[in-house]
Image 1: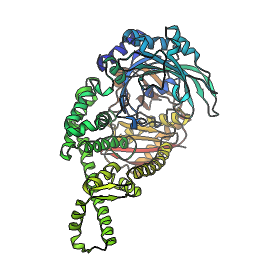
Image 2: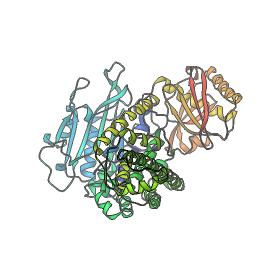
Image 3: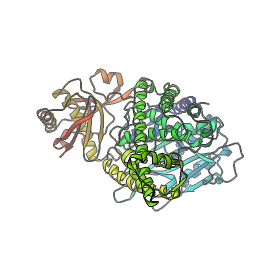
Image 4: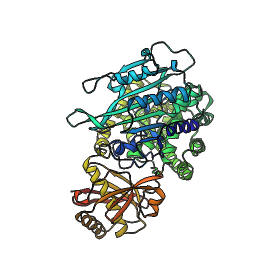
Length: 624
């Protein structure tokens, strides 16, 4: 069974069980700054898991494109990926543990035909916050699972949430499969790496308070996630995800471009490139696609592309063939996935252009790095000549360097210099070491120590960056705070005010909300004047003062669009949507949540107006 067939089978199964299929959401979360990317199918559903009614009901299912960077160092082994597809089904205040587990078991054993003896399960072991999850274990046993195939694990393994400091959370139960042809052992050992996690059922039954208490939730939810690539691997009798039909053609293309000897020695490099370029193609090809940059999603995208190029150098793919290999890979990803994700085909030209641009930039980075290494080596060579009291003429320095390069030598490199080179021009440390070794005929005596010290310096740098990111991404709809609701409602007023003050052609191009401010992107080709900004503020504050009611109505998407409801450009909406109206001033397709009346908002103030990208302006505003 291929991946596309698996996705169809899964969605069809849950539709038969009274679930409604919903569209795959963007990889870039809307109004949720708690994460950079959609990491699970539940992310777009957070407001509904917290009590907002979903227009499609309280039983949902879909397949979702996801990106997770937490396991980036594991990429290259048999099972870990940064980009993956996830199958999910959700109950929002409807069924709970018994039905969720029963449905999971039925799909695995009857629909997919997986042998029961090769399945195993984990449940929450219990702690001071919540009891041992005997209920889930007993449900598995009632379905015929041996107690020897059930393990109880602590919170770090079998607990989800909350998404923020407070909010819904609860135990989960995970499903594992023994990969390979050997017979499964009688007793399940979760530390045995042959057991691979396929599926996870999360039971949101508690609300974590600011005081750290875990109170029972009024609306209990089920959130599940199953990895398409891993299940496809099992169904196709493979032992690694890189052998399935959606990854092997990419892997083979990259391997063919590599030096034959290097391809045999560095299989992990081929896998890393396969994963990273697939992830990059999906980020660029997303309906809210971003471009490589030094911040947020753009930074992750740049890191994926540049890490791929670095591994291409390790595979001895020539500089002139690196860009060709990247664009050929991107075209292959579009070919393999555009049937299920048509946005990739629509944005194919854009994807290729951005890959070419970033590849050219990084090749220039490497060129700069090589020049800096040459300067450093000249300095080392001069010191050596001076120490040996050899003749020295600055006019002959290049001649001396060529002679010195021919001699075998031992060098000790300063990790601070390696890190500064990485920081200043972006030169990867491994490439710095390789260049010194290969081009300057050197044995680096402190290679391992230098890399460990580099990693320490880099970890300190990341810690500072992460602290800034955590501050920047604090709050948002993931915790559905009252201020988030207010700011979310204010974006509706801002959208319409921009249309009335500037142009009726303005549409939303993206938004981001934290607990402190809103950020709103819109199409406009110039800087706003002070007078225009004041008119926008005054109009919004006038509507706040008018105490307009905020109402919502469920309607078919086409009817909503015909009614004049505004929508975000490029967003894929379900066929039934919520339409939020702010009095008779604003009307938008949105999934919420919002305040009930504009009188709750306070005073609206624009703090900054700037360019976001070509033809796109960005406003940052607050409510006082």
